[in-house]
Every structure is written in C-alpha cells, then in structure tokens.
Length: 68
Image (tube, rainbow, N blue to C red; front, side, top):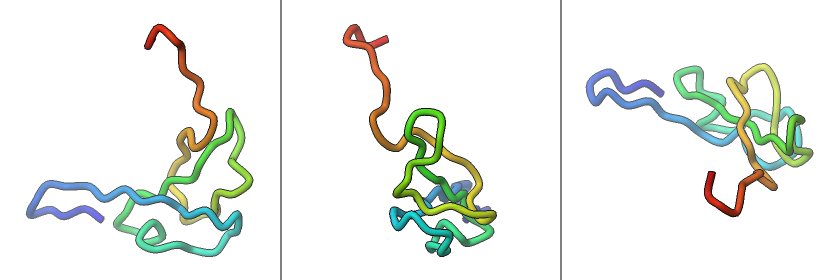
C-alpha cells in the first residue's frame, strides 16, 4: 500500500500455503505482493497467482563464503 502522506511503500509476503489463495495484505492492489523462489522456480510452498507482483529468493539463497 502506498501511503502518499508518509512516502512509504508496503511490501508483503504472498504466503506459504502453496496455493492460489489470496493472502492479505499482499493481495491488496496497493501493496507489492512477493512470492518465494527456490533457485529459478517458484518455491513449492509459496502462494501464487495474478495478484502476486514479483518473486524473490525465498529458500536456499546462494551466497559466497567471502561475502561477495
């Protein structure tokens, strides 16, 4: 949800049910709904659907031991 008076943007998890069931506040059209990725594919547990705006790493994120 964009709060125009405060200049903030609300980002919310799509949920962990593995279904297309809408989860609020992520399903609110004023929020940015985020699904989880497992590598390059949607994580099996992540809710999904047309109401989700984007996806981001959600499990087993890759990282390097040197911090890069």
